[in-house]
Each structure stands twice: as C-alpha cells, then as structure tokens.
Image (cartoon, rainbow, N blue to C red; front, side, top):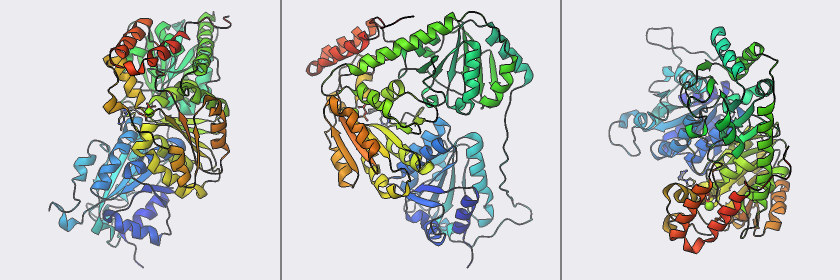
Length: 598
Ligand SMILES: Cc1ncc(C[n+]2csc(CCOP(=O)(O)OP(=O)(O)O)c2C)c(N)n1
Ligand SMILES: [Mg+2]
C-alpha cells in the first residue's frame, strides 16, 4: 500500500513524539481522518465539541506537559473556530501546532464552498510560521519547521493542507535543485547571558537594601535557584498569575499573586522596595511595579525580543532562568546585614493571610464566593492540577489557593479569555492521566462553552487512571467580574440586560451525562461538596450558589476608591444595595488589627 501525504503527516507527528491531537472533523481534513483510521488512531484523535475547545485543550496540554500541543480542524469554519485558542497560546507563549484543511487546489481562488483565505486568517496569530503544503515534497520540512518554530519561539504555528494534497502519494524531497530536506533531531540547548552583564546585575542586586523579586512562568524550572537567591538577598517574592505555580506559597517571604487580582503584600513589596529583580515574567501592569526612578531593576528573560519593557531595568539578562541564576548567585555577596526588610515582608504576608481567612468567613447570602475557594485550599491533593477560567473565580484562585510544591496551576494569563477553564482541565488529564484536575469556572463561562465540553470529559473519562476531574462552578447569575469592573472603573451601576444571566442547573446537567453533580446551596455544605467531587470515581460538577455582592476588590483599593464605588452602586443599583455592605465588610478586614504582630 502506498503512503499518502496524510499517512506521512501522522507518521511524522508520531516521530516527533506527539501522542494526542485535539480536533474536530470536517471534509477539509477527510483525507487525514481516513489516515487516522489506517493508523489505528495514533496519535490519538481527541474529539471536542467545538474547535476553540480543541485549541484550548492543546494549550492546556502544552502548559501542563511542557510538550507541544497539537490541534486539528477543517477548512473555513473549523479554522476560524480555532482562532481564540490559538491566540491564547500566542499571548501566553505556549507551543501549539494547528493542522488545518483547505479546499482542493483546483477550487482555490474560486470563491468555493468553505474557502477562506487561511493565510490571512492566521497571519497574525501564527505570525511565526504558517505555510500551505501544495506538493508532497514540501514534507516533512513544512511540518518539521512548524513544530521546531513552535518549540523555539513558544508560539502557535499552522500547517494548511488542501484536501486533494492529503490524498496524493507521498514522495520525499530529492537531492535536487529547489528541494528542502529536513531532519528530526532536537538537541537541547541553554541560553546564558554574558559574564559582563551578570557582573553588572550582581552589583545592582548587592547594593539594594530592600529587594523585591517578581517571578513569572519563565521561573518555573528554576524553583531551587529562585529560593536560593531570595534567601540570599533577604527578598520578598511576588508572582505574576502565570507564575503562580513557579514557587510555593508556603514560603514565608512569598507574597503571592500581583496585580488587580493579587494580594496586598505583593502591592506593598513593589511599592516599598529599592531594587527589583524580575525572572521570567512579562507582567504588564506598570502601576503595580515600583515607581520609576525609585528602584533599580534587573530582568532575566529567555526571549531577547521581550526584555527591557514593562520597567526601566538597568540590566536585561537574556537567558534561561535556571542557568542564569546558577551563574549569578555565586557572584553575590553572602554577608548581607539586617533582616528588617525581610521581616517586614513576612509580617505583611502573615497579616494578609489572616485578612483572607476573615474575608472567607464573612457571612453573606447565600454563599461567600471567597469561602468556596478558601474551603478547597486545604483539600487540594498535593499533585493537583488547577485551571481557572476568566471571571471572579480567577481572583479567588489567585488569592485563596496555596500552591504547594508539586502542584500545578494555570489560566489564560494574557488573553484572559473566558471559556478556557474546562478545556484546560481536559488537556491536563491527557497530559497527566494519573493526576487530579480541578477547574474553577463561573456560570457565564459554563454557559459559554464549559457545559458542552463536559460531554468531552464524559466521553474520555475511562482513559484516565486517576478519574478525578472536578469542575467547581460559581453560580452567581451574573457576569460578575465585569459587573464589578464597571462599578469600580466606570463608576457605573450594573447594567442588568448585559450582566444578569439565567439560572441553569449545572449539577443536574452533569448528572444527565452520567457524571457526579452536586448543587451546594448553603455555606455549611461547601466543604462536603468539594469532598464529593474529589472522591468521585469520574468527572464531577460541584455548583455553589454564590453571592454576586461580594466584590473582587483590588488589593490596593483605598477607602476613597471604595467610597466612589459605593456611590456608583447607590446611584443605580438600588436593588442590590447589599453590595455596598459586603464590599465595605470585605475591605474592613484589611484594617482590623492582626491577631499577633511581631
Ligand atoms: C471571550 C470573552 N468574552 C468576554 C470577556 C469579558 N469578561 C471577563 S470576565 C467576564 C464575566 C465572567 O462571568 P462568569 O463566568 O459568570 O464569572 P463571574 O465573574 O460571574 O464569577 C466577562 C464577560 C472575556 N474575558 N472573554
Ligand atoms: Mg457569574
């Protein structure tokens, strides 16, 4: 039997070690689907409900496995549906390959059925590499380059294969003019900064009395070194959201998340430091960084295109975080004096934890959304993989969950798209079938696509050794994060026609799919609800009826800002006046005296 182009594509993916392709069928990839049949479904075709979910699943898989995520879709509508997931990969710097179909070459340019200009469509999202295969001899190079580029630049890439090309007999490139051969080897390499730049960085760090470290996802492989340099410098460490699992929250000097969704000690760390060391983060919110001119800055980043912005750093070290820190640490003085700064940071962290405890315990009607996350925290298994959707749950993920060594967590950090929570968790289950996955999702995101994707979880549940995939739903009948943003930033009252959403029975829907489903209506049942999910023998949906009146207050909100927000609510939110009360109640917790202050 001859090898067709489509057979060759799957064979090459296998040679690259690809084990899963997250996809959705259509006649633009019929040739590939037939090849999948001939190849006995290797790599495994994982069928979603929507191509955007396939792309999110590929992103989740890549984030949690450290390997390439691959998604596949048909021409036209299928390719268009992939876009948002591919943008999520682009903005969070994740290697993802999209393989898509196109109409037959004979129809191209003929305004044919489902013919979309895919190069233009993918021009921005896959700007690092997008190519159409028009003759077999372009392979394997086009596929190899797409994969190599995705890995090297940590980005999405796209390979377009017209339907008729998929059916051609495969013939490899020959030893001739205008042929491009290709090889598979991907040897490891490490980027390190120059000795001279390391010395300049060491001088700055040594001269600082109050050092703040900001870590992002780029620091994930350098846990030991980050701890070492933080201890050496007596520094506090704040984490960008994508770096939440880069360092344990149990360390006394880790101030937790930074930014609007972050913590007060992170805000204070940046406000009061005199030196900033950023490792593997492109955190964009300048107002949460030290004031310009107030702190001297050093940055470490693997990508030379991404350094030097976000803060006027004096030294931009380009290199792998681990290898760079391994070279930098021996250059630092070891006999630093006073620990005052370190003690202040640790005190702030301790005080914040008490605040969070008190905020979680505030009684509201019916359930406090902060408490839902707070109650999950101690129950999380040590090998848990947590995904959060975009919405108010991301605040509670950022502030209430204690990342412990070995745990993983992620969200759509930069695109901040709704709808990634459930598919990320599914991607995680394929990356690590032996680990439990937990998705934190709002009711809006469930209605947008999370519910449909539960069908995918139900379909594949038997493949996972550890059966647990727990979807926690914050059912507040509201698109709450935006409702609060309108209040806080626009001073506008909630516009109910856009913000209020219908009540839906998420747990009952899960049960209709044969999954575990629990609806929690009272605070005293929250813990038991989570336990039911974590003890279930398959995917579970635990739905909590939460109060939309509890505000995801930014950590640095002052009393003045709180008053402005309260005034906006009183202007037009008369039917929800309890929000003022809850907002002030939550805020006041920060100003209560700590139980014990060192
Ligand atoms: C695709 C997409 N559409 C819209 C938004 C804007 N947005 C951000 S959070 C949010 C509300 C989410 O509501 P829900 O999922 O119910 O969570 P809640 O904030 O209510 O807890 C919206 C509309 C977005 N980030 N992504
Ligand atoms: Mg909601």
